[in-house]
Length: 153
Image (cartoon, rainbow, N blue to C red; front, side):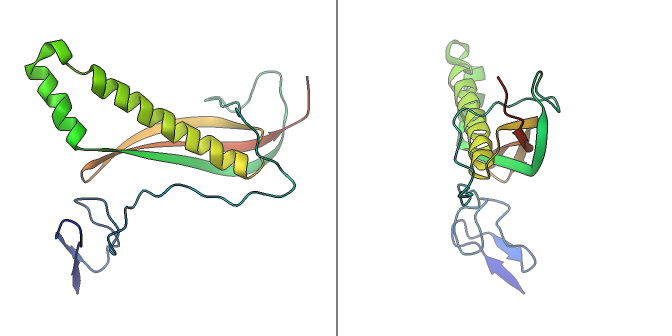
C-alpha cells in the first residue's frame, strides 16, 4: 500500500508518515510544529535560563536532573538557491543567508530554553546544536539536559 503527499504529490510507501521531499505529514500538515509543553504548576517559567555546553555551571550545584529538552527550527531549501546565487554575484555573497542561518539557530535555542522553562528548569547543560537536511528543509536542532540548581547567590 502507498500514499501520495497532498502538498507535492510525491508517492510514498505506507510505512512512512511524512514526505521525504517536502517534509509534510501524511495529512498535509507541516512536520515542524512548535513545542507547547504544559506548565508545571509549582514551577513557574523562568526567563533567561543559563545554558552551557559543559555538563555543569561553574559555581552552581545541580540538585535535580529533569531530562532532555529540545528545540527545532527549519530553513526552506529556497534559501540555498539564494545562497548559491551569491557565488555568481560576490558583492552580496552570503551575508543574508548567514544572517538567516544565525536567526534560525537562535530560534532553535530559544525553543529549547522554553521547553526547559516549561518543566521548571533553572538551566540547561550539555547543550549541542545539530544540522540535518530533511527533503527541502535544513533542520537545526538544539538539545540539552534540563536541570534544577541549588538556590545560591
